[in-house]
Length: 427
Image 1 (cartoon, one colour):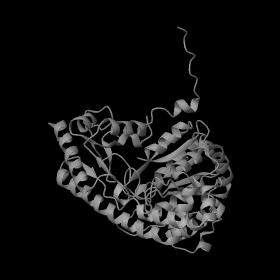
Image 2 (cartoon, helix red, strand yellow):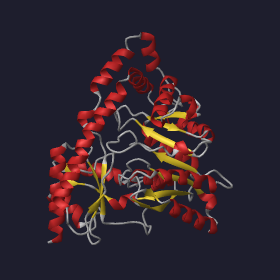
Image 3 (tube, helix red, strand yellow):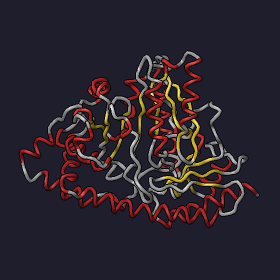
Image 4 (cartoon, one colour):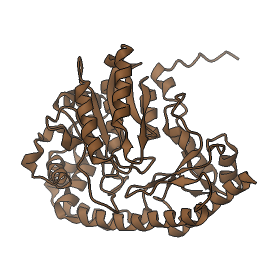
């Protein structure tokens, strides 16, 4: 029998292999009956069935309009939705459309915000280039960086978000080492961060943008603000966005999505880009799809025009507030007063960040992960995934807990099972 020729894959294919998100999805499928506090999925009951049904009926009540929605769209996105999103962004920024100082062509519509993150990475990074990230940060974006051969360097954070002094110190160090030309991007999840739930303090937002401009010497250093959870606020006052501190509109890339606030199945994301990046990002996007799903964009435009979107977001926030409170109450019940166990109380978003005693590791190969998933049948995201691998910042005793999928009873039971697994490990 003749030997099969070797499979020759690209370097980028090899960089992208063994993604943690794929393993987590596999575990969820293979371990039926496990309560997942890992999945960052949205609440099934909150999905906008009636809103979409009404909008689709409206859209298809006019044959010409329906045919336009069913035709190919443009790479940048449907103009009818981009214009709606200028008004939507003005509401979020608490200003007029004119005060936005934003050309509608700077709004690029993508297949969820994840596509925008990938496009920006493709546009900016050559292998060996540097992205500065909060520690911890969104682990799927770390996978995106790996996929383009970029280096992720962690920046210290605390309960008020990324530390600007630490950011400035790292940029100073990189400059002294002759590596400043390789630094292309600062990546921040500004609101209710995935995974920590932290929102960066207002004065720090201003400082981060100022530092990006300060260190833009021979090339532009961009800030990517991944504001996926921006509209999921349950407590406290809304803060000015990082983007609002970029008055020249040449430094901050704002990424938002309707997957969390409306529907992940619709798959509409939005990028607000500096003019210098619109062409490069759209050129790359043209190679990928020359336009994200046009029908979905017209559907969302119809929902926004009707006023039903804002009322739906209010309902979503009310539902998630109850679920967040259920998780915090369960953590209080199971862990209050337990030495070395701490957690952050988010004002919004979908996640709670739990820290255990230093000696308890939470990774996929750890005794705790095996006990939790196999014996006690509960799943979480190991915290070490949220740090750039191989760096001194990595902590192995943390985990991300999501209250997005489970109802209040499932959350309470899931935390009870997790606590039982930890107690068993400590006996």
